Image (cartoon, rainbow, N blue to C red; front, side):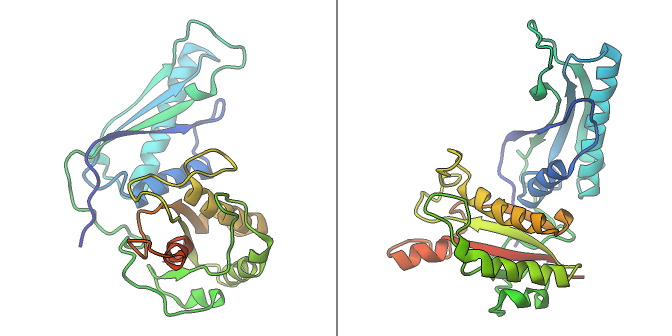
Length: 276
């Protein structure tokens, strides 16, 4: 059953460092998630618009904004977006400001990706990424140390990883599980995974729960990112990892009638992207 993108026009922003036009790892991961979460699908019409701040000459800033836009287009095409669907790729140069700060304006050093998903089109399978139907390929493996045995798209519930209520900081009693997760990734260098956070006890239409530590409505994202950071800090190649948060949009129990129901929905899952 193909998935469909939501109707509408969305703008996603990527911010660059001063005088930089090359995507860094975090920018690439943001684009990966846009594609994976069907924010950009086959058939979406995409406009890519680069900018620079006023530091430097007008000609330099124009060229820099063009190179930024072209870097984003190149990465999108590498990730399955048809070049013909990119209807505009241009650089606007520096953003004119009446008041100028000597340090420049970091928010002006960016590329806007404008996506038109108004035409609903089937989403083809993305090479190297799992299908999004969480009811499929549920894992029969019960130990995190065995996730290397799972095939592409399989989902493993990461048990015994704990967070304080409303917070993303990992409790110390989670260390043993995370250590085993690190060990299996270290021992299987071809294994690539997606770390996916889910929360309970909120309206399914809400984007996510509030993270008390940051004030952001990104609790499931922040929890998944915390595990991602743990693995990267231990030395796992970030190219092998993706993290995402889904709020309560993918509940195991649609109607929560008990603490047990809430516990089943409040979870972190590991999804196998590739194992070859």
